[in-house]
Image (tube, rainbow, N blue to C red; front, top):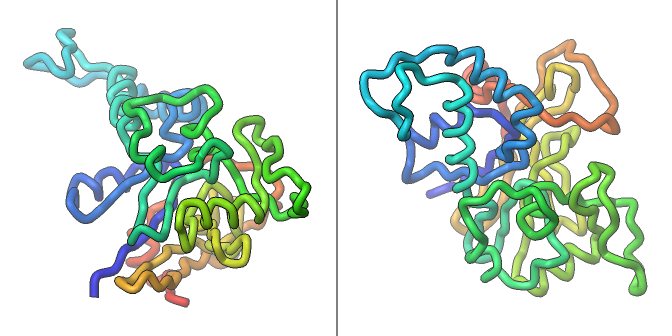
Length: 262
């Protein structure tokens, strides 16, 4: 039976090598850290500059005719790839996946099919919301309440349960799958199980004791979760503190036997 595995990561670049190895069966969605203004600040530019200080060239690469290829040029080529990554995926016409969340401007799936690429989004709009928006259980859901509120991140919006219900009805969806937030058990439902947040990095940044999770969808669109437990003795930090980067080796964790299914 064919299964679809949903991994939600932020800036875990080893998964791009999995895509290269399995190009027909492994699919990647863009996250907010695939935006140049974010990965420049949070260390990826510096890492490229440190790792690729000098790459001798015998021929022109990417139009660069210099004798040496520098780390900054490598970083720019990564951005070219990131800017082509899709922002959403639709599974079985019923499960919509993205990194961030919903947008008040999203009224049709055709909008997602025609999103402009390549793009490095910086201004407000659907691109930004798909990368940055968050569900908020504290927002009221009365008939006269607004579905959207300013985000604590200072970009995009928070949305309530009513926004999820409206989007599922309007778009013909059974579920919305997204990441973007640390959740203690690796996955967390919202809005009567119509939305689920998946976070696949256990013991995030070495400072949390959260579990990670992988969501599996079978051919009947039934879901289950594989839980990756944090290492024993890991420190715990408040979930209220926003963290924006991760560096986790999922293959090593699974090989070490720290993954279980629930």
